[in-house]
Amino acid sequence: MKKSIIFFLLALSLGACSSAQEQVIFPSDDSTSLNPIIQKHDTIHGYKSVINEEAILVAISINRFDRFNKTKIEKKLTKQIEKAFPEKEVLVSGDQKVMWEVESIIEQKPKKEDLKKLIEKIKSLSKEET
Amino acid sequence: MISSLVTAFIVGGLICVIGQIFMDVFKLTPAHTLSTLVVLGSVLDGFGLYEPLIDFAGAGATVPITSFGNSLTHGALAEAEKHGLIGVLTGMFEVTSSGISAAILFGAIGAFIFHKRKTMY
Amino acid sequence: MDQQQFQKIVDEKNPKVPYFMNIIKAFIVGGIICTIGQLITFFYMRFFPFTEATAGNPTVATLVFIAMILTGTGIYKKIAQVGGAGSAVPVTGFGNAVISAAIEHRSEGYVLGVGGNMFKLAGSVILFGVLSAFVVALIKTILVNIGVISW
Image 1: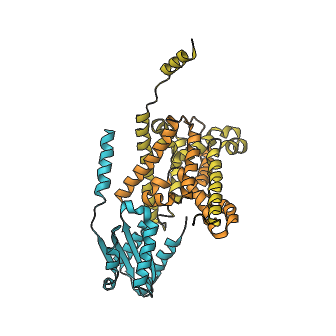
Image 2: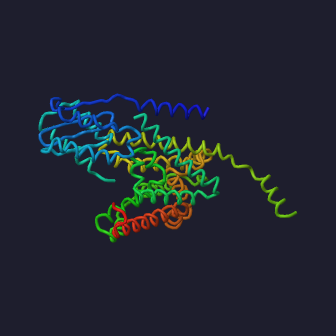
């Protein structure tokens, strides 16, 4: 009985690992140079990104077992994206909260000024320490 | 989402298994077991290994008592990185563990609300 | 009766520790508590401005609050009888130790009873937590300063 529960949980955890790459960028026309950078990383199975004139936010979904190296992956990707977008402030995060916030921005489709405020909000959130 | 819950279950469960082994095999009292685990968490953070574990397992790593040793060490190390040796001391006093403050507060409230009975195991 | 015989009788009289079952029980009970913790973390992240890094604190506080209710109503004692270390190792176990001591000694007054006895069990955890944090941070800082390792 108890063994079957453990097997069930194991099967669940393995099944949850295999999901296809998911990419959403807002506004959608800015995708050209972001896509190839992230696709090179096989530790990431999807990303959602928001871009305006000053900043670029990238929320990435890191594979379960690569999450041990979350900070390293974030740093590496930040450097690479900074190279591609030298004039913009880059924030890369594997945090679920940032992912949810980016998703809500994409759903809302805000105007320019609102977008700026929302991006600032996420930035200050992700800088907070425990 | 579901995979986060499963990893939290497995990692949290494994840390508890380590505690159970301390209690059964090495015949430690619960107080000794918890103290050992706190020291373990602190040492792991010294090697920079506990934060990756939290990134991996979420609540599976923050809920067991090992995270208490980790948060204390982490505060001390963060200050030490900024201010050198003095920072080790000031960092110790700066960090608070929400677990301890919560336990003190709710302990007092609990003593106020609940009647005396055998509640300990 | 020599020492060996005595030991044999003692071993026979003592119930054998069911190592395997205890470990399974600790794994499941501890795992369930951590899963509930993960659900609370998701709740705080979804509805409040907390990230994965900062949601740990409110989660722990909430779990200790739940531990207070369960301790006061005597349910935590029953969980502990099943779970062993699975109920003692999560922060709820720490909360249970503090809160149950506070409740039991209330009759001696708030200052001497509650205040004085609250940390009878949990005090050692705090002592060794602070002490080891100090030692580890000190060693690491010294090692960094003499250039053996980097941050």
